[in-house]
Image 1: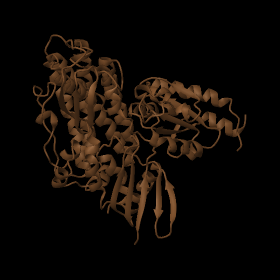
Image 2: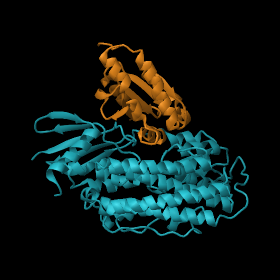
Image 3: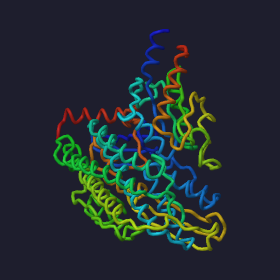
Image 4: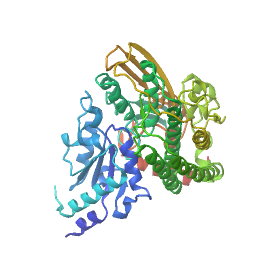
Amino acid sequence: MGLIAWARRSSPWLLHFNSGGCNGCDIEVVAALCPHYDAERFGALLKGSPRHADVLIVTGPITRQVARRLLRIYEQMPEPRFVLAVGSCALSGGVFQESYNVYEGVDKLIPVDVYVPGCPPRPEAILYGIVKLLEKARGAKNVEK
Amino acid sequence: MPIVEIPVGPQHPALKEPIRFIFQLDGEIVVGAEPRLGYAHRGIEKLAEHRTYVQALYLSERICGICSVAHTTCYVETAERVFNVEAPPRAKYIRVIVSELNRIHSHLLWLGILAHEVGFDTLFMYTWRDREMVLDLLEMITGNRVLYAINMIGGVRHDITPEMADKARKVMDYLEERTKYYKRVAEEDPVFNNRLAEVGILSPSDARRLCAVGPTIRGSGVKTDIRRDDPYSAYDEVPFNVITYDEGDALAKTLVRIDEILESINMIRYALDHMPGGEISVRVPMRPPPGEAVGRVEAPRGELFYYIKSDGTMRPYRFKVRTPTLANIPALCRMLEGIFVADIPVVVASIDPCIACMDRVLLIDKSRGKKWVWTKEELRRYSLKWYEEHGRR
């Protein structure tokens, strides 16, 4: 395993994107990163820029206004990139199914690696999703564009 | 110097929902702010017209995950007026207890975010640790941490047993001690004072004219609170003080919220001690009679307004919501005028926006046609560095 793959597995950098959700999942993602649950013990670190991030955490149903921005953020991330869909809305649209303004799921727009169900999922569930993603990242090759 | 425009948002890594601002700058001073809303538009009002009254309750809870109890309380209070039913007294007390616990969790969360914005991450970690105790309490009472689903039309779904009340009293004692410590930090800590005092001032006349609500207007010395002015649930029986501070700056809004946590703790103690016995819910028919009703609730961020119109079927004919953050946006634009760029994060945070973000800041210098992009984190770092170099102005 190369140095880059080792670094990625040991310290994945996260980008959190709310695609029009209710904030419920977002506060649970932040709670998972705070000392009580402490996702940072897996090396996970929240970053502000997609260009620094390995993992995109998407919460919320994708509204039509943010869909283009979600795609742009995804395209700005360096490869290999991973997507963690958190919450019922990000999985299927949740209670907002049949709305004229939502896409009903992140996987309608971008490929998703790990799904974390729940409305909202508990911080433990989000941690479990991050650990699953790390297992998946272990097998990933450093893809050159 | 030419006026420079900065569009801010709508993506961001923090908690808040997407919103975009275009700031007009004259050098280091903000001369204008123009919001662009609607990134989180999910069509909830239209969706509710296709759902039954019970289904729409769960939809209303998911308008906002932080003040979810305020939304369901407002929904059930309004729907009960349409259905012509009244919740039993014990249910009303349980609604007050859960609403106030929700207020404590929301204000602690906000205090942490504000501390993060001013570069005081220790306080951020402290408040989020204490907030976990409130969430544990809410989980014990309702079964969930964030979306509680405790309110239903005609009552509440879960009772509070004496064992739960004992545990809640213990947590309240701990939180009271911690909150007093946070108050001391806000009043005495030089970092906090330098960054918050005399920043983003909203005068009482502006606050009234622009229809600000909640802690934003109470921080300008205007005594208004729906819990006192138009009591709902059991708020007419639970004594409490309406907290106001006269300064109108970001520090006053902080102190209003910290004092409200202390008030909420006393209200929860009173409600636990004086809770009447009896049923916690009444049966409600599937179809309400034709009619309409409005309801108002004091959410953690201010006045929340609901309107429901019934045409006698199982589904609402019209469902309208006005949230406190929308009411505070005009006041926010007023507060942003005349401040430094480095103060933008603090002033935007001071209204406790449910929708606000500053992830990607695109700077455009009109005279040179030059563009560059900042993330919210970079803007925060810029503000911290700017204050290190310039100190207190």
